[in-house]
Image (cartoon, rainbow, N blue to C red; front, side, top):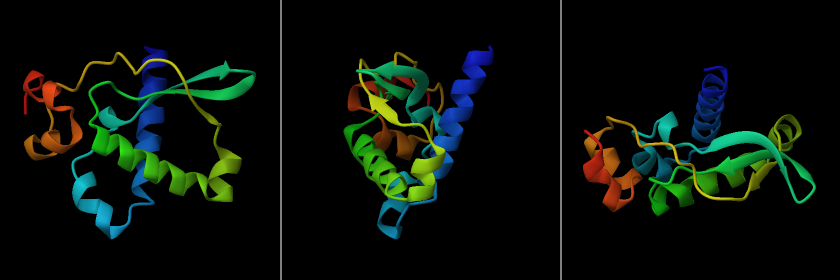
Length: 122
């Protein structure tokens, strides 16, 4: 329970941080994004580097993944963010977390891989 709550809090903070660097062109696509679409981040190390092991959800669309990467790059461009956050290490398989049971129908079409949309109740 404690680990699950910690992961959920990290995803919530990540969503809020990314929302803070949205530009007007991104807002329409981002609308409806929830913490369920954020990557799982766990403490760990890879190739001698310590930080957060980042595992994106396997059900997230490539378009949303690309936008998340763009927003993350904007965040990491700021010295304050880099100074106060762990290094993000992208390695390993996608998260095996299940998709949310409910999601906005219009957002689901944009945010989920096409084969995953029928599995969720919208």
